Image (tube, rainbow, N blue to C red; front, side, top):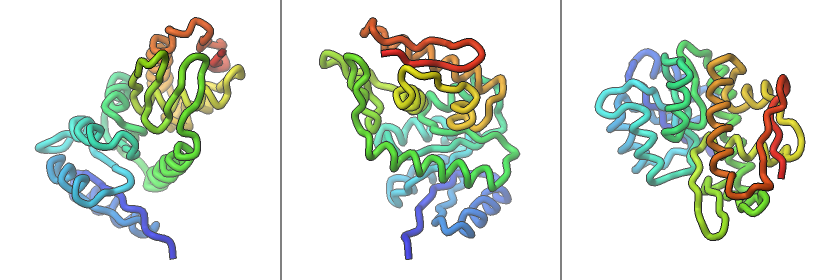
Length: 226
């Protein structure tokens, strides 16, 4: 019998928290449910979960601040934010604070399950491809850092995820809609704007190697040339 994967759920709305907890447990996950950010931080430190599902608006410590604190200790654990906020700037802020995915309320449990499994699958992929050469850079996928001439350039989680998929399709077009659905969950306007922001950030971080380009193929997507 396989070991149950431990998930930390931080949700201050009692009814929603119970529904999510019970639904995940019926899928054979072990769920630790906390009702505020401070309690969730303590549970993270003592119970060592393998994935976090964090509500953004919580008492004592909100989801963004909680994720930022957790990233000081663990840069790899997958984090999914739950929130009613849906503006592009809110989505970007979530990823900048260390989130791997962002689910807007109201959501279906099936969608949450799919995203949890997708993130857990990416963790396994990362473990098999730790360092990826990109031109003069070495891209450490696990540590989410670019190294060039002994200089270390730290990436956010979303930057690392996006760069990984660009490298997997280097010198070929990375379809815009496909990658939006895979990393953002939807190819709507706000998510597309968010991805454009992260592409711009990656271009700036890769500019030390003039042989590397991320070009926009209008109407199709992006291409990493190196």
